[in-house]
Image (cartoon, rainbow, N blue to C red; front, side, top):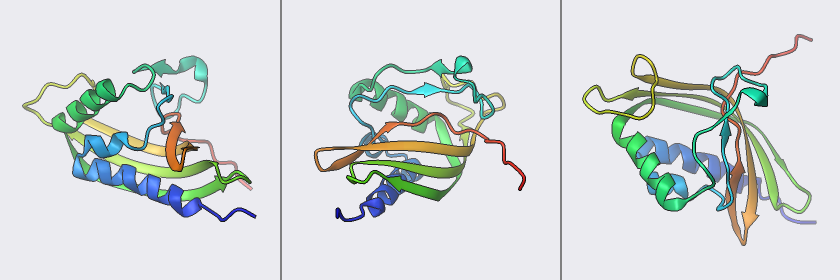
Length: 156
């Protein structure tokens, strides 16, 4: 039996949080898989992929670093709360799903232009994320994550 590697997924989620909290764009880019393509729902209620958009192309280190740094330079993190709700691992321990509840609030610097139109100068990312990880050699990388969304909760 292969040893459980779920603690490494916890580290990936925590690393992403640290990158936001320290405005470290280079640290943020260490989590992305080189083949990542990111489709994004336009809002937290857009469950239908027919509504989703493509904001950036396939992972390109230089482009994504520039865009991530631009975002971090034009925004202040107000709060960043993340709670891992569940981690699922493949039997081979080479693929994982982390379900993470997120409440992250940014405020745009009033004196800096930003390509993101948040309306009112705030960007509130709140909801549940499904983060899909895979191994590249001995490292974990984020392969895919649809945007953070609110999911309907069924009453029991």
